[in-house]
Length: 316
Image (cartoon, rainbow, N blue to C red):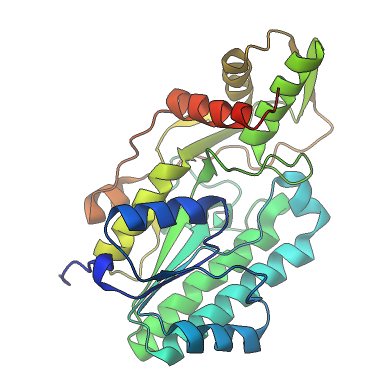
């Protein structure tokens, strides 16, 4: 078994380091003693442009790359911009990994997504089922773009001996999440609706779908720990699920968030809007067995911390 890689000793490039997940990964790297960490934003290097990716690698010369940069959003954003979600996620990953290989990078971590799984994957999702069908249509372009980076990493490992790993990340939430109503994921969207309705004295909110679909959620600080744990200790070509292993329906989630926000009005459901994939819950045993990761933050605790953070922004 390969020896543990101490990131404290490495020159590290974090793409997407100024984003939601990225800022928490940077904090975790600092906590573990990493000092040579570089995270230039998209205003400095546009990762969809190959010549700028080449400039980035010439400037930073990283030994380890954590590729977190992505274009993400909820069901609505995925339906409205499927071409952008496919192209930008695919081209960023392809170019960043290729330049990492060419520059002699010794470790590459790709953040994939459970949106890559087939629509009717047996629950809990096991990594061996990843290729058993087509993803759920509302976010298939995004899921397939990220899935191609798994293929790229495995091909590069086979031909070049390139040490690339692929983490299948579940839905994340937490402080610094995106609360924009046009592009946010389900948890920040519900929090915003509940707090806004409460502040305005409104007695009802309307949410997408029927509420019957289920999801699994991981607090972003736990996700950051998982990424750094995997970067230091995981060396296999096989993808790894990263999640909490706990499933909840969107209806139960909405009721939980409403209670934590102090909103006691009615929750209405717009069944004309899509539910997305019927169920999502991961088998997280590979992460536990291969590099010792287990989520530490309960959903209730994580939601409270997220709501408190959003309230401190003056959301009410």
